[in-house]
Length: 117
Image 1 (spheres, one colour):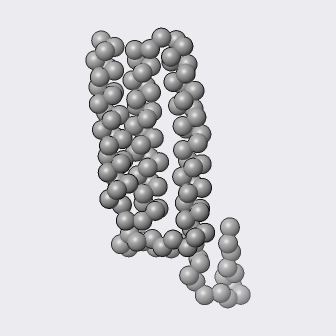
Image 2: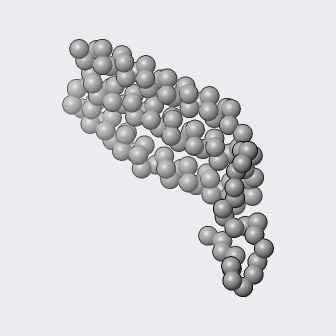
Image 3: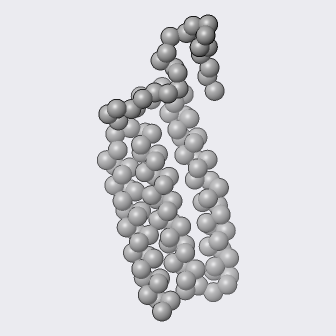
């Protein structure tokens, strides 16, 4: 039974990761590419780790749990750093209908000061 669970989880994980890679290729700007990379590929890697836990022994499961913990901690931080770097380099959003809510393009006045984080 564990072999069937493993097979299903591997297929799901590889499918999710493949969709993430396709999303990275097809998305128009860096901000939407970050979304595809950080969400889809992360979920695929976690699914593959869970598949390994389904058939692995205790030592393998412990290692895979540490890998999952590392992914959970580092993936959002890396996506944030990449997005922040793109913002500081003034990368424009190319997605249709995108709205810049940073306030960077608004005129400066006394009632609405220009803040830059």
